Length: 261
Ligand SMILES: [Zn+2]
Picture (spheres, rainbow, N blue to C red):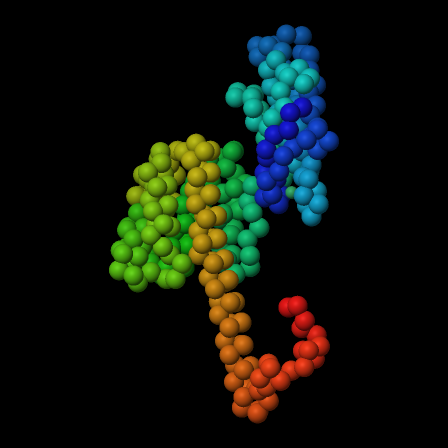
């Protein structure tokens, strides 16, 4: 089998899949002639090469004219009769605890049902994006489209919360221009509008980007600032206690074990 590039859905690590980490089974189904022609039940598994993960991903599918060794890569059959990833069940990434729980719930469920019900998945994703704009940016309007407009105005005026940039608003606008998603954002948040799994996936990826650029970046910033102000406070305390010593006065080897740090 030629090695191919793949991203582990468990840990997100990009890697090249080689023979030893790949297993592919196809069992012909014999029902004495069927409308679908020759049909096989297939299972495909890939083991993650990341030593910190090593988890297995498994897909099940039913395919026409599928013999042993006829193809290798994941999802390379354009028209399977059935194809689902069984493990992991959802593509949802673990989110840190400081992302509000209702947002994580909507996101996780949107991922879980993306293939079976893209309409419902997109509706949850849209609600999650609205929840984020309301929670993180403090904007509440009648529709998501109006909220995005208000967010752009805030960014233009330089009044948006830290981390909300022109690029993120552009990304939201770009997603709005895809298929039925734009129409989605003009309507009531709970109105279900048909979309396909690819469109639902675009919304899910937008959510992941906003989690990262808004919540994760804010937490990182806050932790760095807290560390800096602690250093400042410690220094002040040292001076107040009269314990501040010039580094030049500390003899080599007597630096509290901090050598090389
Ligand atoms: Zn992995």
